[in-house]
Length: 106
Image 1 (cartoon, rainbow, N blue to C red):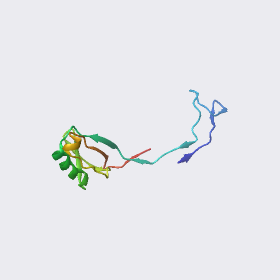
Image 2 (cartoon, rainbow, N blue to C red):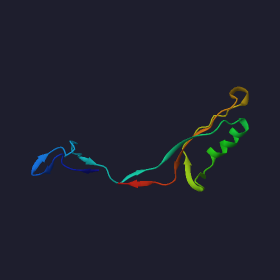
Image 3 (cartoon, rainbow, N blue to C red):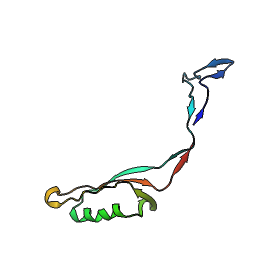
């Protein structure tokens, strides 16, 4: 974190705001690391397909297809509820993923 004084000299005058009436920032973050995340929801699926999708959550290597490209991602959802047709009928699978690339911005 870079720190600076809350005043700036503009036209020889010491001020705490700029020409757009914005107060001067005193702390500026830099070298920020973040990862892109997505929340995915499936179409309506039955019990058999829902059980098959469990293997997706348990898999250590997962790719998502975006515009005919395969991008590595990590599934951050760590729970799975088994559902049955008798009681739940059709249902959706919801998972959270984060892409396997750390983005460093300034």
